[in-house]
Every structure is written in C-alpha cells, then in structure tokens.
Length: 375
Image 1 (cartoon, one colour):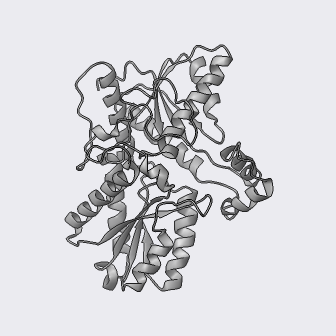
Image 2: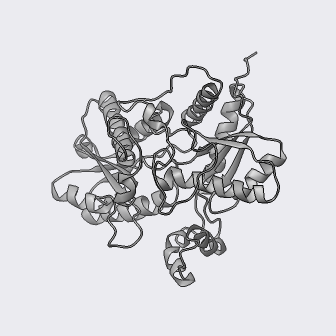
Image 3: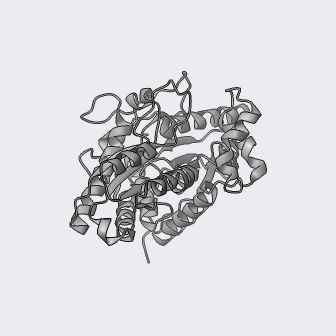
C-alpha cells in the first residue's frame, strides 16, 4: 500500500484563474468585471467582446480548468496526497470570494493557491495576490475566521511544465512539409505587457531588480529550443514574440507582435514557422483568436507554412509538477531543507516573490501570507 504523502500544514489547494464567459449573454457582464472601475461604456465592451462572439460567446478557459482539476485530483489520489482541491476565478463564476467562503465553511485553515500563470508580472502574479486580499477582507467583514493563504511559486522552468511544450514543438515541426521543416523558425509567443510593467517584474537572480517577465520567458524558450535540437538534431533559430496587446496606443508595450514577426520572417526568406505559445497554460481565447485566427490568417496571406504547437493544458506531467510544488512548499513550511525542482540557468531561487515586487499601478494590498518570503 502506498504511503500517504504529507502536505501538512496545508489542508486544501485552490486553483485560481481568470475566468471567462460561458455563453453570449455572459460576454458583456464578464468584461464589465474585468474592466471594473475604468468607466468603459457598454457599447465599447461589446466591440471588445467580438472575439468571444466569434466562438459563440464561450471562452474555453473554464472547461480547460475543469480538465486540469480532474487531472490534479487523479494525480493526487494516485500518489496518496489527500489534499482537497477547489476552484475560484477572478472575473467569473465560480468567483474567488464564494470559493473561499466555501473552503472556510468546510473547515480549511491553511490553503495553498495555484495560479494559472507561470511567470512573474503584475497581471500574472501580483494581481492575483491582490484579489486574494480583497476576498479575505470581504469575508472578514462577514465575521468569518480567515485562513492563512500561501501562493505556490512560479513554475515556468519546472520539467513538468517544459516537457509537454517540447513535445508540442517537435510534433508541430513534424507536421510541416518535409522540404521546409529543417529551415523552420520557432516563434515563442507570450502575452505582451507594458514595458514599464516588464521592467518592474521580478527580481531575477543575476539580473538585479525587475526584468523577470522577459528573462523567464527567454529562459523557457532557450530550454525548449535546446531540447528540440537534442532530440531532432536540427538547430532551429528562435525568437521571443508577443501578442494580445491592449490599452492606449501611446503606452509602450513589449514587441515584436506575432503578426509583424511573421511578416519580417517571411521577408527574410524563412521557409516556415512554428508558433509555440509558452506564455499560456492552456488554449484559451488569446490562443484561439490571436494565434489560431489572426496569426494563421497572416501566415496564409503571406504563403508562409505555419503550425501552432500545443499548450500544457491538463497534461499528466503538469499535474505531477503541481504535486511537486505542493510537497516542496509544505516541506519549507515544516522547516525541512528542500531543493526546488527547476531546469536552466535561472535555477529556482528567483521564483521567490519578496514584499513589493511587481508593483501595482496604484498602491493596493496583497493578501497576508502571500507576501511571505517564499510566496
């Protein structure tokens, strides 16, 4: 009989995600949640929501989170980790505050949080910590006894996150016509953010304060490209590119944009491109629209053979990686000496989020416990 794995002092895991509409009537209310406090007119939100309406008003992210929940529960059960798993969203049902209320009612007092973002940035990390603080404040106002919450560290360079993406790139290369396959370039794509936010994300060991968002993505791209070369014998040139830019046009954001990159690659004589969306845990709307719709149309317009590789999704190796992170954090809390599992030159020490990192656009608190030296 398998010995039970020990997650103490933690008694529950919360999957925390962005959320998305699940039908046409949900699109504008969902976008109102996303843009709350910015005074954006409803007609403008309908225009912004056209991406969702192209897909029946349904974001795939919720079903993908359900699949990840199933994968995590199976992995935990198969390995004797008796940790119940809950799910809450920032902007749509099941809402974070409601899920935390349920967890408190179920008696949970030490909660670990898995955010569906692997990298350091304001929107991908710090904002989730602020959401947790806001929810805890609301529950405290209801007179509830608050749990202690800790966020799992960034996992972008964990083997269980990287290996499925390596497989995806190799499979996409194999789908290209044989006469262009070996000359194909790899475009590693992630969500663009304002350069000011990129400059203050971090810190990264050896890079000083800030710059973690770009440095972490470059490291993932390098690790995948190296693994592809080792397994295929072909050294494919690569570049980190960006997508899904929004906001005022006068504010600088990270570049190059994926469609601009495809034009530049085609103009320089590149015979084919594989797009690897390393910045996204699953195939949600930014992947389906910005890559599978817009970038695909641009490649077809150029006559440039292009394939898009898979995201990690609910791959069993990713579920196993989350189990590793849970046990790693539990060991740290129990005062054990723990060696974090990570690949590459950055190691794992840079995954620490100190108080005040990735500052908000305006001063807002992050949840107690989330600013701990290891959160």
